[in-house]
Image 1 (tube, rainbow, N blue to C red):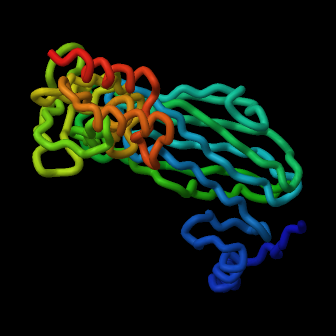
Image 2 (image 1 turned 180 degrees about the vertical axis):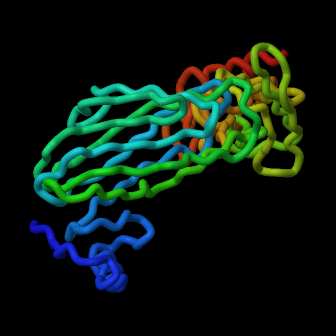
Length: 301
């Protein structure tokens, strides 16, 4: 691929429309590139998404990718700034090709490749972001997201990093789910309680609705959900929350469904059938669960 060079004239005699046409052919907004005395025929597509949601006191990775579309691609620098007060970690080994220099400048990740690189060289850079433990709920922006490069002796050129640049620290998160009896029927009148570190943080009664929905504080760790209903054995499910990307789904179905304390033979046979021929969905049973049902039939309290 060849560069398109323009002779160096007085800037006043070079119509702005020419640059706009070149950018249009390359598929880039004129606002995305810094104008220079020369321009390259193709430009890198620079993409780097940040997660939509994060937790206080946790960390996540940001990966940025782009491709050199000109030979002699050199003196390339990448900068990406996390929200103020957040910190970043960088490492040369987290980049492909391996970066020549990296710098964690407070909340900004700075990465440099010397080059030159051939056209088609694919760049991937990853850095880590640490979210402060005392961060307030809200939406935070990554700013000053760009790469700077030269093609042989021409340039420098600056391109913005595309992709999601906002991360939300939620005030709480949603836990949703379904509670069934071991025979596959949906139950109502069930109390679902959420515990964190032994303390109750949320509770809801599933009454007349197929699903339950409740809110819990946005903390990383293990949450314990208990489903209880009169005349049924309690069921407990532990959920480890590492990153929140949407409602957390917890299903008290199949082997996690509720077992009645008293059952009759037809109920037992239904459960045996679900063991031998698991129905579609999450209502298939393991032998151990069926044996618990049989025990409730034989030894009714």
